[in-house]
Amino acid sequence: RDDASWARAKARVLAEAQAMARLAHPNVVAIHDLVEIGDEQLIAMEHVDGPDLEAWLATSPPFEERVRVIVDAARGLAAAHDAGVIHRDVKPPNIMILKQRLVKVMDFGIAKMASGSKTQTSMILGTPRYMSPEQATGKDVDGRSDVFSLGIVLFELLTGERPFDAENMPALVTRIAKAPHAPLLKYRRDLPTRVQAILDRALQKEIPNRYRHASDMAQDLRDVFQVMPR
Image 1: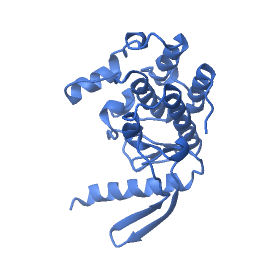
Image 2: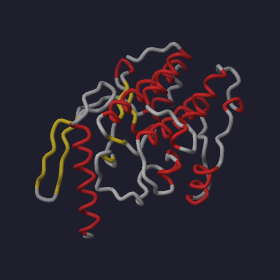
Image 3: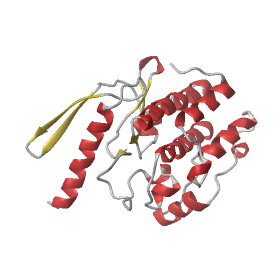
Image 4: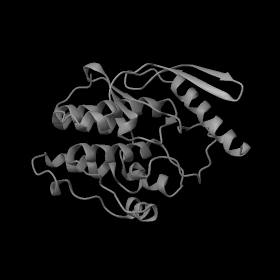
């Protein structure tokens, strides 16, 4: 066993426990306890019963419900960011849809504590197709990286396509870091023009040009579509 790799993995599990324990928000899966048995660390988490966003989309949910999912996920991420937690792996499988359409953001296993982390800045963690430019290139991140990833999820929910894709990792990193995303009108001409502005702001390459806070993105979506979080 690689002791250094094991130590890093163990530290990330501990970071997840610490991150989740600090959060108390309806749109974030709660953690109840961390138990260490020998070399094993077990996390007791809130039981969630429902499909993830990827499976839920296969049921062809109504458009308004799709937008509400992003609004609620953004609210959960905003609470995490306020607690000093950056998710780093926002993607459809990490967003659960419970009964009554209650949205839960989960899997903070590679979360970075904003106040200090065991994760090296140069390490690339996350799921490639949902990474922010700074994440894909191994740079430091903050909550606005999660906003970028959530923008990718929103684009996918609205169009059925991802804004960035490629046949291999180097090409994908280049597209995420430098290539503009496709205009929304290429796929949807029926949406309010302001939706393009919301996506454009969430998917800005430069961090300062993005939404400063995930809650701001949620509010803009609510203003356009008049959807209220559950």
